[in-house]
Length: 282
Image (cartoon, rainbow, N blue to C red; front, side, top):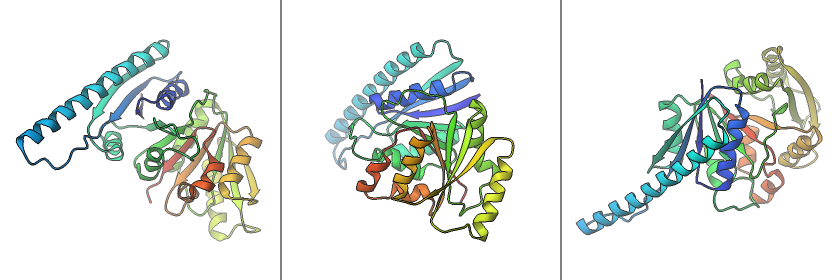
Protein backbone atom coordinates (compact mmCIF):
# COMPACT_ATOMS: atom_id res chain seq x y z
CA UNK A 1 0.00 0.00 0.00
CA UNK A 2 1.38 3.40 -1.00
CA UNK A 3 1.77 5.89 1.86
CA UNK A 4 1.43 9.57 0.96
CA UNK A 5 2.00 12.62 3.14
CA UNK A 6 0.11 15.84 2.34
CA UNK A 7 1.00 18.92 4.43
CA UNK A 8 -1.80 21.47 4.69
CA UNK A 9 -2.24 25.05 5.87
CA UNK A 10 -5.97 24.77 5.08
CA UNK A 11 -5.70 26.99 2.01
CA UNK A 12 -7.61 26.12 -1.17
CA UNK A 13 -4.27 25.35 -2.80
CA UNK A 14 -3.43 22.83 -0.09
CA UNK A 15 -6.76 21.03 -0.50
CA UNK A 16 -6.31 21.04 -4.27
CA UNK A 17 -2.96 19.25 -3.79
CA UNK A 18 -4.65 16.63 -1.58
CA UNK A 19 -7.43 16.19 -4.14
CA UNK A 20 -4.84 15.84 -6.93
CA UNK A 21 -2.94 13.18 -4.96
CA UNK A 22 -6.09 11.09 -4.50
CA UNK A 23 -6.85 11.31 -8.25
CA UNK A 24 -3.26 10.43 -9.11
CA UNK A 25 -3.63 7.14 -7.22
CA UNK A 26 -7.36 6.57 -7.64
CA UNK A 27 -6.76 3.00 -8.83
CA UNK A 28 -4.28 2.19 -6.05
CA UNK A 29 -4.78 1.24 -2.42
CA UNK A 30 -3.28 4.19 -0.50
CA UNK A 31 -2.87 5.52 3.00
CA UNK A 32 -2.87 9.31 3.21
CA UNK A 33 -1.48 11.32 6.11
CA UNK A 34 -2.79 14.90 6.26
CA UNK A 35 -0.34 17.02 8.28
CA UNK A 36 -0.78 20.45 9.84
CA UNK A 37 1.96 22.10 11.88
CA UNK A 38 1.34 25.17 14.01
CA UNK A 39 3.85 27.42 15.74
CA UNK A 40 3.28 28.69 19.28
CA UNK A 41 5.28 31.88 18.93
CA UNK A 42 5.61 33.05 22.56
CA UNK A 43 8.40 35.03 24.23
CA UNK A 44 10.68 33.41 26.77
CA UNK A 45 8.43 32.44 29.64
CA UNK A 46 9.67 33.71 32.96
CA UNK A 47 6.68 33.58 35.31
CA UNK A 48 3.85 31.27 36.19
CA UNK A 49 1.37 33.74 34.67
CA UNK A 50 3.31 33.76 31.36
CA UNK A 51 3.43 29.97 31.37
CA UNK A 52 -0.32 29.89 31.78
CA UNK A 53 -0.75 32.24 28.80
CA UNK A 54 1.54 30.04 26.71
CA UNK A 55 -0.47 26.94 27.61
CA UNK A 56 -3.72 28.66 26.69
CA UNK A 57 -2.33 29.79 23.32
CA UNK A 58 -1.04 26.29 22.60
CA UNK A 59 -4.43 24.78 23.41
CA UNK A 60 -6.24 27.32 21.21
CA UNK A 61 -3.96 26.67 18.25
CA UNK A 62 -4.09 22.91 18.79
CA UNK A 63 -7.89 22.90 18.92
CA UNK A 64 -8.10 25.04 15.79
CA UNK A 65 -5.66 22.77 13.95
CA UNK A 66 -7.54 19.61 14.89
CA UNK A 67 -10.94 21.10 14.05
CA UNK A 68 -9.77 22.18 10.59
CA UNK A 69 -8.09 18.82 10.00
CA UNK A 70 -11.37 17.08 10.87
CA UNK A 71 -13.21 19.31 8.41
CA UNK A 72 -10.61 18.57 5.70
CA UNK A 73 -10.86 14.85 6.47
CA UNK A 74 -14.65 14.80 6.09
CA UNK A 75 -14.42 16.68 2.79
CA UNK A 76 -11.77 14.45 1.20
CA UNK A 77 -13.51 11.25 2.39
CA UNK A 78 -16.67 12.48 0.67
CA UNK A 79 -14.69 13.33 -2.49
CA UNK A 80 -13.03 9.90 -2.63
CA UNK A 81 -15.79 7.55 -1.54
CA UNK A 82 -15.23 5.22 -4.52
CA UNK A 83 -11.46 4.87 -3.94
CA UNK A 84 -9.56 2.36 -1.82
CA UNK A 85 -8.02 5.11 0.30
CA UNK A 86 -7.67 5.60 4.04
CA UNK A 87 -6.82 8.87 5.79
CA UNK A 88 -5.10 9.84 9.03
CA UNK A 89 -4.66 13.39 10.35
CA UNK A 90 -1.59 14.67 12.19
CA UNK A 91 -1.46 17.93 14.17
CA UNK A 92 1.95 18.95 15.57
CA UNK A 93 3.35 22.08 17.20
CA UNK A 94 6.75 21.88 15.52
CA UNK A 95 8.57 23.28 12.51
CA UNK A 96 7.26 22.08 9.15
CA UNK A 97 10.48 20.74 7.58
CA UNK A 98 11.57 18.91 10.74
CA UNK A 99 8.12 17.37 11.11
CA UNK A 100 7.91 16.26 7.47
CA UNK A 101 11.33 14.57 7.65
CA UNK A 102 10.40 12.77 10.90
CA UNK A 103 7.03 11.71 9.50
CA UNK A 104 8.66 10.34 6.33
CA UNK A 105 10.87 8.16 8.52
CA UNK A 106 8.32 7.15 11.18
CA UNK A 107 5.41 6.47 8.81
CA UNK A 108 7.55 5.07 5.96
CA UNK A 109 6.18 7.67 3.54
CA UNK A 110 6.57 6.99 -0.20
CA UNK A 111 5.66 10.44 -1.53
CA UNK A 112 5.01 13.98 -0.28
CA UNK A 113 2.42 16.04 -2.18
CA UNK A 114 1.83 19.72 -1.46
CA UNK A 115 0.55 22.93 -3.03
CA UNK A 116 2.86 25.47 -4.59
CA UNK A 117 1.67 28.39 -2.51
CA UNK A 118 0.09 28.81 0.88
CA UNK A 119 -2.68 30.79 2.47
CA UNK A 120 -1.06 34.14 1.56
CA UNK A 121 -2.04 33.47 -2.05
CA UNK A 122 0.80 35.44 -3.62
CA UNK A 123 0.73 34.61 -7.33
CA UNK A 124 3.77 36.53 -8.49
CA UNK A 125 6.40 34.16 -7.15
CA UNK A 126 7.72 30.84 -8.34
CA UNK A 127 6.42 28.96 -5.30
CA UNK A 128 5.52 29.68 -1.72
CA UNK A 129 8.52 29.82 0.59
CA UNK A 130 7.43 26.65 2.42
CA UNK A 131 7.25 24.70 -0.84
CA UNK A 132 10.74 25.79 -1.87
CA UNK A 133 12.09 24.87 1.58
CA UNK A 134 10.47 21.44 1.38
CA UNK A 135 11.97 20.85 -2.08
CA UNK A 136 15.40 21.90 -0.80
CA UNK A 137 15.40 20.17 2.60
CA UNK A 138 13.28 17.02 2.44
CA UNK A 139 15.13 13.72 2.52
CA UNK A 140 14.00 10.16 1.99
CA UNK A 141 11.29 10.51 -0.66
CA UNK A 142 10.13 12.49 -3.68
CA UNK A 143 8.03 15.65 -3.41
CA UNK A 144 5.29 16.62 -5.87
CA UNK A 145 4.34 20.30 -5.88
CA UNK A 146 0.87 20.94 -7.35
CA UNK A 147 0.05 24.36 -8.84
CA UNK A 148 -2.83 26.42 -7.52
CA UNK A 149 -6.16 25.61 -9.19
CA UNK A 150 -4.60 22.87 -11.32
CA UNK A 151 -7.31 20.57 -12.69
CA UNK A 152 -6.30 16.93 -12.54
CA UNK A 153 -5.00 15.40 -15.74
CA UNK A 154 -3.23 12.08 -16.08
CA UNK A 155 0.55 12.51 -16.40
CA UNK A 156 0.87 10.72 -19.72
CA UNK A 157 3.63 13.07 -20.88
CA UNK A 158 6.41 13.40 -18.30
CA UNK A 159 9.42 15.66 -18.81
CA UNK A 160 12.64 14.63 -17.09
CA UNK A 161 15.03 17.59 -17.15
CA UNK A 162 18.70 16.72 -16.67
CA UNK A 163 22.15 18.11 -17.37
CA UNK A 164 23.77 14.62 -17.32
CA UNK A 165 26.33 15.96 -14.85
CA UNK A 166 25.55 13.27 -12.32
CA UNK A 167 25.08 9.52 -12.51
CA UNK A 168 21.47 8.51 -11.75
CA UNK A 169 21.02 5.21 -9.95
CA UNK A 170 17.99 3.02 -10.61
CA UNK A 171 16.85 3.66 -7.02
CA UNK A 172 16.91 7.43 -7.58
CA UNK A 173 14.97 7.08 -10.83
CA UNK A 174 12.36 4.83 -9.19
CA UNK A 175 9.76 7.59 -8.53
CA UNK A 176 9.95 8.65 -12.19
CA UNK A 177 9.69 5.06 -13.43
CA UNK A 178 6.81 4.22 -11.08
CA UNK A 179 4.86 7.27 -12.26
CA UNK A 180 5.53 6.38 -15.91
CA UNK A 181 4.41 2.76 -15.30
CA UNK A 182 1.23 3.87 -13.54
CA UNK A 183 0.02 5.84 -16.55
CA UNK A 184 1.96 4.16 -19.39
CA UNK A 185 3.50 7.60 -19.87
CA UNK A 186 6.02 8.90 -22.37
CA UNK A 187 9.20 10.10 -20.66
CA UNK A 188 10.64 13.12 -22.46
CA UNK A 189 14.29 13.42 -21.45
CA UNK A 190 15.10 17.11 -21.77
CA UNK A 191 18.67 18.41 -21.90
CA UNK A 192 19.41 22.12 -22.16
CA UNK A 193 22.72 22.08 -23.98
CA UNK A 194 25.13 24.96 -23.72
CA UNK A 195 28.02 23.17 -25.45
CA UNK A 196 27.99 21.57 -28.88
CA UNK A 197 28.36 18.05 -27.49
CA UNK A 198 28.38 16.15 -24.21
CA UNK A 199 31.68 15.67 -22.41
CA UNK A 200 32.94 12.24 -21.36
CA UNK A 201 31.15 12.27 -17.98
CA UNK A 202 27.87 13.38 -19.53
CA UNK A 203 28.11 10.73 -22.25
CA UNK A 204 28.61 8.03 -19.62
CA UNK A 205 25.64 9.23 -17.55
CA UNK A 206 23.45 9.52 -20.65
CA UNK A 207 24.29 5.93 -21.61
CA UNK A 208 23.43 4.65 -18.11
CA UNK A 209 20.17 6.59 -18.07
CA UNK A 210 19.12 4.97 -21.34
CA UNK A 211 19.92 1.55 -19.86
CA UNK A 212 17.71 2.25 -16.83
CA UNK A 213 14.83 3.39 -19.04
CA UNK A 214 15.11 0.70 -21.71
CA UNK A 215 11.74 -0.84 -20.73
CA UNK A 216 9.92 2.50 -20.82
CA UNK A 217 8.64 4.75 -23.58
CA UNK A 218 11.19 7.56 -23.71
CA UNK A 219 12.59 10.04 -26.18
CA UNK A 220 15.54 12.43 -26.09
CA UNK A 221 15.14 16.17 -26.61
CA UNK A 222 18.14 18.44 -27.03
CA UNK A 223 17.08 22.00 -26.34
CA UNK A 224 19.23 25.06 -27.00
CA UNK A 225 19.56 27.57 -24.19
CA UNK A 226 17.92 30.62 -25.75
CA UNK A 227 16.96 32.26 -22.46
CA UNK A 228 17.03 31.69 -18.70
CA UNK A 229 16.81 27.96 -18.01
CA UNK A 230 13.47 28.40 -16.25
CA UNK A 231 12.06 30.03 -19.40
CA UNK A 232 13.47 27.27 -21.63
CA UNK A 233 11.79 24.61 -19.49
CA UNK A 234 8.49 26.51 -19.49
CA UNK A 235 8.56 26.70 -23.31
CA UNK A 236 9.29 22.97 -23.57
CA UNK A 237 6.39 22.13 -21.22
CA UNK A 238 3.98 24.10 -23.39
CA UNK A 239 5.28 22.84 -26.72
CA UNK A 240 5.25 19.16 -25.72
CA UNK A 241 1.98 19.25 -23.73
CA UNK A 242 3.81 18.00 -20.63
CA UNK A 243 1.63 16.93 -17.67
CA UNK A 244 4.39 16.53 -15.06
CA UNK A 245 7.95 17.81 -14.72
CA UNK A 246 10.55 15.67 -12.90
CA UNK A 247 14.03 16.64 -11.71
CA UNK A 248 16.62 15.12 -9.40
CA UNK A 249 17.86 17.31 -6.56
CA UNK A 250 21.53 17.15 -5.71
CA UNK A 251 24.30 19.63 -5.09
CA UNK A 252 24.61 22.11 -8.00
CA UNK A 253 21.71 20.46 -9.83
CA UNK A 254 19.36 22.23 -12.24
CA UNK A 255 16.56 22.43 -9.68
CA UNK A 256 18.88 23.93 -7.05
CA UNK A 257 19.81 26.67 -9.47
CA UNK A 258 16.20 27.45 -10.35
CA UNK A 259 14.91 27.54 -6.77
CA UNK A 260 17.68 30.00 -5.91
CA UNK A 261 17.11 32.31 -8.88
CA UNK A 262 16.03 35.87 -8.03
CA UNK A 263 12.25 36.36 -7.94
CA UNK A 264 12.26 38.25 -11.25
CA UNK A 265 13.63 35.16 -12.99
CA UNK A 266 11.36 32.81 -11.11
CA UNK A 267 8.23 34.56 -12.39
CA UNK A 268 8.83 33.04 -15.82
CA UNK A 269 8.89 29.59 -14.27
CA UNK A 270 5.76 29.87 -12.21
CA UNK A 271 4.68 26.28 -11.70
CA UNK A 272 2.01 25.53 -14.30
CA UNK A 273 2.03 21.72 -13.99
CA UNK A 274 2.81 19.32 -11.12
CA UNK A 275 6.51 19.28 -10.41
CA UNK A 276 8.22 16.21 -8.90
CA UNK A 277 11.58 16.70 -7.21
CA UNK A 278 13.53 13.58 -6.22
CA UNK A 279 16.25 13.98 -3.56
CA UNK A 280 19.39 11.96 -4.17
CA UNK A 281 21.72 10.28 -1.71
CA UNK A 282 24.51 12.79 -2.35
